[in-house]
Length: 350
Image 1 (cartoon, rainbow, N blue to C red):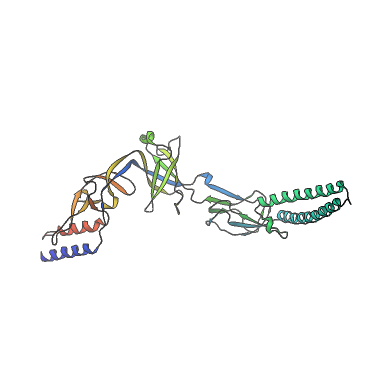
Image 2 (cartoon, rainbow, N blue to C red):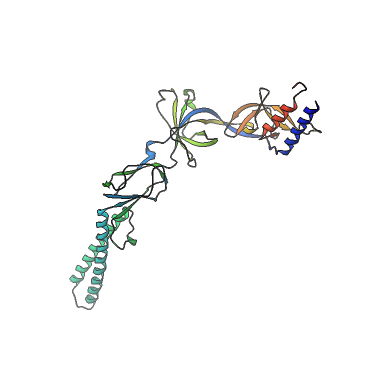
């Protein structure tokens, strides 16, 4: 008996060495909810192709399959005769325009002195305007291809293709040193974080669902929020359930496409209940309980067991009956208290 008393005393001392957090029960609004089976997917429009904008020869890839890329990041280098001709012509036209502008200024000076005719001045102006129009057309074409003419000082066959959006490289279609034609797919890209949740809802809940309602996915110990964007018109043939598509919070990362997971749909008007943190609930003597701090004398255990009835829950809190608003309870690490109570209840025959 002395040994059991000492053992219990040591447990109590150990308990005091652990900081047991507490909180106060508060009223909280809860929505009705239902548990769902769900699947992480990507819609077809989340897949994009990076196409070759010119014909040429693939010289080098700056990325590899499975790599994340950002919009504007260079992905492939192509050697292109088309680009060589366009850049060469742009430089030539620019030089001709500079020379023609000088001719026009010289003719204008002569015209002001009465040494040449207005007709001659107009011819120089028309020639200048024609060269400028050709140069601007070339500049526009090169700009569409991502080539900055302000930095173009010599003709070049090198053409760099850039990613047009953030994403993950799912496939590289052509190896290096391959010839490629204009508008040929080179790289397949999955839009980064463009994940959707495909959830299966029992038919009896059909009247209660609406676009925009919240579905919380439970994945790898985290609660990830999604919003319903589409309610498919046909039920799933296998499960005979309604199919919901919800867009996943853009902050979510490292999800596995086609993986199945659990989720919770929240719907209906909110109702208020006395709430506690989920981490406070313990199953003790076949009942749901929480532990309430009390004043204790000597070696008495400073907690009492309070039986509660869970009514409703969300991602972090549980609405319960059996507690009053403002009442203090053990909010976490309740297993320390539970362990101490169980061991202190041992008798001589245990």
